Length: 397
Image 1 (cartoon, rainbow, N blue to C red):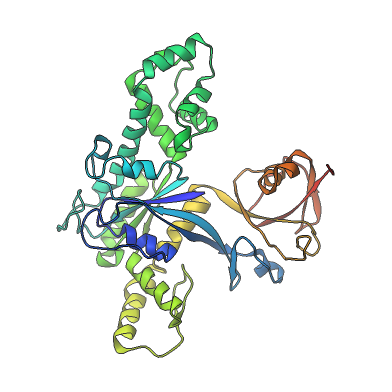
Image 2 (cartoon, rainbow, N blue to C red):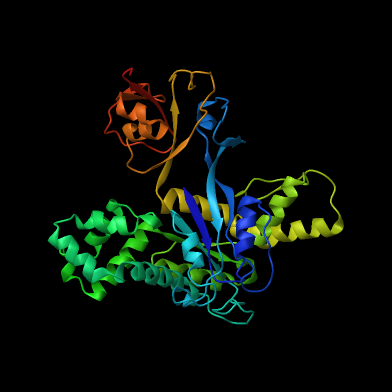
């Protein structure tokens, strides 16, 4: 799974990425600092089952600290975009190409209004203007892919009696679209199964619905500490009217805290509402950290960066962490490792889906599963829940 960090130039996009991943990136106060995509690993953070069960895990594909599971997420920071990018403005479609396989997008918006639509320094720019332009750029990009040969494509589908959803998905497989996405978008757009009857408006409406399904967006209202509570409230409300989750964020504060924690000056985990000083600080360091505590942590409850990532994973993408085990009593694998692996599964997934996630052979030979928390047998149609611990029982091959 991959999450894309996107936005116009000079809004703190690369700072957000650096704060989320601790990858060193070039950060500067001018447009198009990022030209080639930066790739790193961030974490979705949630309570670990051992906090409830009193066990000590031996994580193999995730990290564990203070009762929390840190589940790795691939993150990509792409080139800044400007309105009209789909027509070649700014860096053109490069940012779109970099986002082809992203499961979700974090749109960094400058809540302070200090950057205009091109990412140039200004005053009193309304950040509401930026909320919708990203989705329009993606819509026009996908529309351009489909509309290029639509008439010829539609006739072929009809004459050869092809499955329309499958044929469209094949056209868009390069951006991670599957047949289920297409069917859902067609249903929401209320479109005919006969593509020759689709108008340009129908095609664009379909593309818009498909983007909501295939590239859902959450908004990080960055530089939130530089604006009033009233301005933040307005941004959140306007975003919600358009169907977005909007999180007040200070990427600079998060990056500062994470670097201080990495250097051993403070005890701090991403998403926490405070930090603890571990060793003597200079007056300048102490003042900077106290300012973050006062202006960001005490005001918003966190820097917002981790909250954005968590909501993107657990709410926007509706994923649930599930822990497969081989011994439901010891909660371990065959080597004795306690809760060694976690998988992020789409909400509604079943134990058989989990079995296939672990290994194809396990899915093919699946018989039933056991809920290790209740020690009850569950069938293949059981819906997996958040932090389930599951033993898969299969036939021997």
